[in-house]
Length: 317
Ligand code: BDR
Ligand code: CA
Image (cartoon, rainbow, N blue to C red; front, side, top):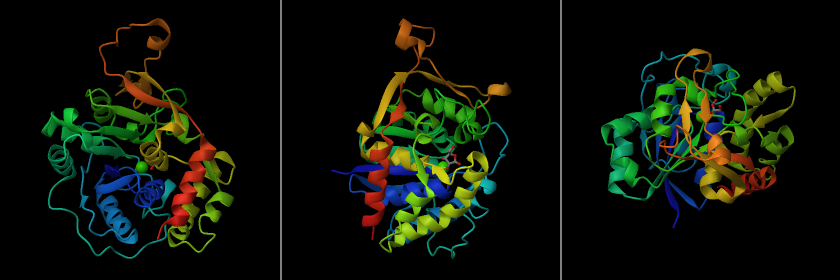
């Protein structure tokens, strides 16, 4: 049985790459996309999510519009300089034909979990505001969700917005702290692993080698994103952020994990930092021992992940 997943997303170049990977993989069934600000504002994230379900040949998959701003901090740092002003590498795709659902993302998440108890895996690959709002609407979702697989945070390495913080977490640190500490089964797929797996320009070109429509789309939207990475690293290669969360859902054996509580700093120079209590691994109980343990990805078999991604994209319709 495929896992039913809801991808909570701010598409976004790597979000798009993750969504197309999920649609191309038999191990998962995408039962909805919910949208959030981050790489673009939420209105554009919703338009892009509609574009993506239509491009993937799944216009029946519902798209629910999410929160337009974080819980407490101001909305800032929309990443047009990373993903293009259209979120799709400035490729300026035609407008979608479909419309979002008539209910907000948080309500959609609650309704889906409560109607499919034990079956829904949430895969947030953007800021965590919608999940925090869903927890407030219906706290019992913690008992009925199958799993929450988050792309975000950094437990053993520096952030990517500043030394402390990863982008998805700093956008709404209060929401992230609630989500990491709600007591549901959380896996964090953070920069610890997503920056270890790089897709070179050559690899990205190989995704369109057989004339694949999906591979060609990924090549086109990733040109701007690759230029951004080149400015940062002087390498023609991109980090594999959001597709890594989908890879974890498909095949967790790709990753090595450690367990421990995670707290999120909400102010000061460490705002957005995901601090993992690794003391427990070495010394036993600490003052954070009453916090829920998060399953944190600390290493990845990158060649195997890249082979899986390529296999699925080349086989996509
Ligand atoms: C995360 O931030 C966004 O720019 C990406 O889509 C990814 O979800 C990486 O820090
Ligand atoms: Ca994202």
